[in-house]
Length: 196
Length: 75
Image (cartoon, rainbow over the protein chains, first blue to last red):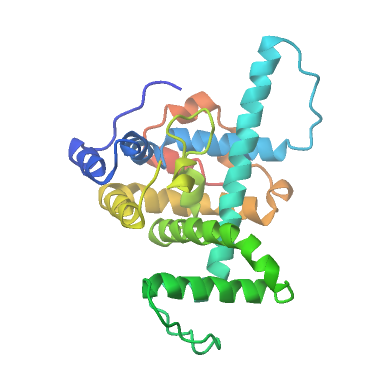
């Protein structure tokens, strides 16, 4: 990868710097510069090529040249796998978005037969939790009670990532998911979005 | 890397104000057909998109925000 082309005004980069932390400032700036740029299109091309060629049998890998080539190929596979994963999490979120109102205000709780919560805690978080539980009940109606806890972490991640991807696509359109940065070799990594 | 929800929303706002109208929304619209084929599993049944057949070196040389970049998604 060559030098990063400057595209955004310094003022914009400064604005990004102000919302970021020491840890993520550079990654956000690079993402802002590269999103929907030629490098992201080239990366989408790699992912589509790799997806189309996925049925090919791997050759035996011997020596550093072939090994480097294999690593590059695995990077591309990881990238398209991650893109597909994000797309499906996004779809899942959108398909169940009745449980995740944008304003975070939950008017359907009584309709769903959930008892109103009492006690301490952020009511928004409580309501989110109720919504999440309701979604799980709908998706897994026959799951024994003792297995609900095992799903908690998974659903928390889906809800968080899906919510961010949904905000992204509602603002810029669905195709923007293919214009982020996914490849492992990219230090800015769109994958960082997943960890945010 | 950690980013709170409000920081993420602020980042989207900056992206939108700086390049949303001219760059992100148009190219996202152009690329959505590829994404839909990709996620629906129909990609293998479709003929290659134009951007698949352009040498990588040529793609990388196209300026961000240019009409040439958008044309890559036209079939």
